[in-house]
Amino acid sequence: MPTLVLRIEGPMQSWGISSRFTERDTGLEPSKSGIVGLICAALGRSREADVSDITALKMAVRVDREGHLSSDYHTALDVPRADGSSSGTLVSHRQYLADACFLVALEGERNALDTVENALKDPVWPLFLGRKAFLPSSPILLEDGIVNSGIEETLASAPWLGRTGDMPDKLRAVVETTASEGEPKMDVPLSYLNRSFAQRFVKTVWIETAKLKKGG
Image (cartoon, rainbow, N blue to C red):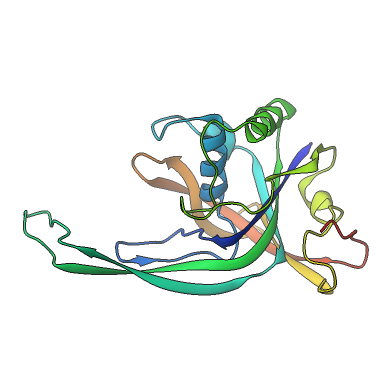
């Protein structure tokens, strides 16, 4: 089964999967909901659109640079409550990853991958990394594009995307798998309009870097 390889890199990223009201979290790597949303922006799909063809792609993330977990806060004045009254000043705390870099691999049918690749080459809407203010600092598509290897083989062979001189001995990777092998993660989007999500299962594996080329 072929695999499409993406580079997710930027000064700031946010991939929340359990954010509630004034507390906005981020995962330590891109969520499936976040990557599917990025692809939908490239395709020009509205929030009401069906995304089942994109969520059907198997996903894995290799962490080429972990980045730094940070947080900031935002204030808003006179936010209306449901009863019509004002809340006064509302403070929200928002986490983000700074200076992180990820290799994302998507495995599936060739036609579906071709559609995604073509959309990312010429996106309909701007692409962002979890929040509209967080823009990619590198092209999303790698030169290799679609490769003829499975998802785990791709993780173990694709060039390292980190900076010259700081390659670790091994890289953490989060791979979509079966219920018997993995842990549950509630980040498969069913509807962006209604903010409803389904469960998938992921496992953590470690990639030895001795045989990886330095992509830079």
